[in-house]
Every structure is written in structure tokens, then in C-alpha cells.
Length: 178
Image 1: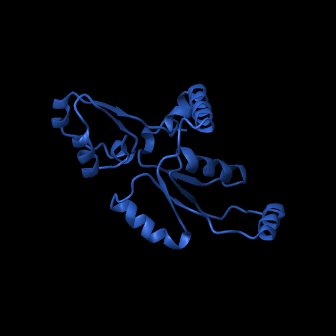
Image 2: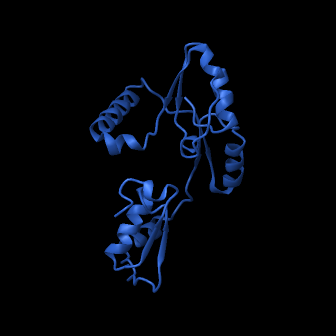
């Protein structure tokens, strides 16, 4: 399995043994339409490009079934968490540098700073401040799908009437014409 991009992905392909399966989980090469040389396929490799975000959208029943199966197997000790390293917020810069250099096997987890219980309780019960849409156009980057689209809907539901939704794919995003 791979989530590296560019040259790192090419090196990963070179390490795949003959008749092996290469499962691509990274997104950058998908969005950038990265070209891959065919030399590794002389070893009869199989390549699977998987965009995991599409599974719950396209096949929610399958996504639910798979997550339930994973949870059951983890509870029974058949599956174990991926290798990971936990870092404090103060180590965030070093953690990101490690990721940039592909120097981490597994995941890097940044722990959130501790919030005193009284602060958390106060925040949970405090009333949300009144929001008034500003004058002018509100620009929502990544606004044609996912989190950006949900933000745009939230803004519209609260009275924003002049929204500009931007995305990498522009009008080719399904539903963007609306």
C-alpha cells in the first residue's frame, strides 16, 4: 500500500515484487494526473488506485459493512492499529518536516492541547454569537464539494447571498453547475 507521491511513489513501485499488488491510497498523484512509467509492469504487477473518500458516497452500505468488520476484528485482536508516533503540539513543526522527508513509517499523530474541564463545559453551554453576513462576496475555497460545500450551505442558511465557490476542478465537479 502506498500514499507517497511523485518520485517516492516510483521508488515504491520499484520495490514491489514480481506479480505483486500495488494499492495507491494517496490523492496528490490522482489530482495532478501524474504520469507513471510502465517499466515496473514488466514484473507483472497489478495497480489499484483507491480514492477512499468515494466509498461512503458511492457505496454507503459497503463502507458501513467494512467499518463494522474492521471494528470487530480489532476488538478480537485480529487487526492492530497501523504503526504510529504520537507528538505534542510543540513538536508539530518537526513532525511535518518528518512527513515532508518521507521519514516516517505509519502515521504521525498530533495530540490536542489539554483543555481544563471547566473551560470545556463553559464552551459547550455558551450560546453561539449572532452572525450577520458581511457586505460583499464571501469566497469559499474548495466550496464545490466536501467540507467547503458544507461551509457554503451553512453560510447560505444564515443569510449569506453572495457566495463565490472555488475548486481545483471548477465546473467539472459533479453538481458545480448549480
